[in-house]
Length: 203
Image (cartoon, rainbow, N blue to C red; front, side, top):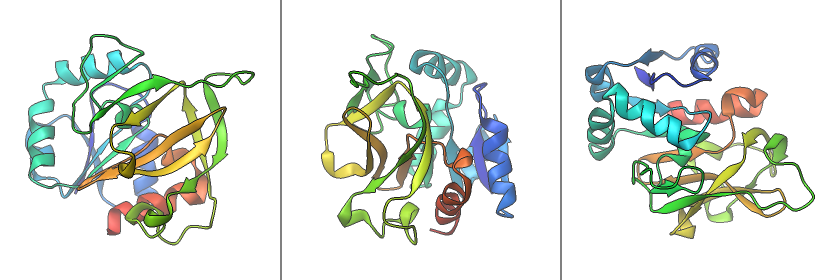
């Protein structure tokens, strides 16, 4: 069973429906035991970094999440679910992220363009990661759907698996060990997004 962590943020049901469309058992849960015994975990997130961290802390699910990840359970972060994997964010100074990935989250610098970055954009998949789990079997520059004003700046560039251009080079996906995460919304990215989620399920 794939556990979709329910900590009171949006886009939960759309994520659950996307997995259902693949015929995969994925369950919204706020039960620490289910998270600890899940085969894989999904950490969604929309809204502000600080609000997501506050909700996650108040849910009491952080210990179970960290224990599962340290036990090598595969984790997929989505949107702000990617951002809170890092140490912190310019959006919410003084609020710590989960610290599972080293780096910070910074506001998009896109002079002349509207921020938030909202809509479809093409991915540039890091060449050494072309056959990385999430992107296996995709076309050269697949389009995915974004809604965000901030993006992750990892300390280790090698964990970046995909980028896109929006005024500057934007981190679109990261991976390290059993952790994978996308800044874009695979559950809103049509057939490409379903393909990415299927890759997560079968990897």
